[in-house]
Length: 164
Image (cartoon, rainbow, N blue to C red):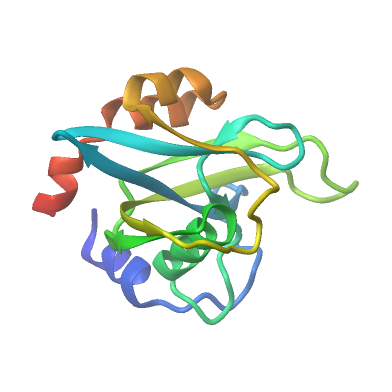
């Protein structure tokens, strides 16, 4: 990853909710929440509120926060999760949303930031609105629909994150 891109993710504050990428997709952020159980990584998936599909906690970059802080906020708001987030994404994936208003862009690119699980709060904004569960990387990859996210989950290596 280039030095400039690395700095963007760590230091640049978001100034607009809808940010288009050079290829015309709209940027979102996600947290790949993981834990090590007997040295074996597990990934937290949540269900979407609309369709009940298994997804990562994700959403819009938040104005006044960095991309990393935005991903952390999504993990808290949607799953009550707190932890240590690596400041550079482990990858991106794309998806299309078909239930957008006419004239709005429904093509998204999602930057995925790994978040090492430390704890789950007792109360959080979307508690009771979603199901949450821990899965192996392979099982998580089987449960999500987006091909790019499937590949990202299968190839995720927590040891590479720790090593930086």
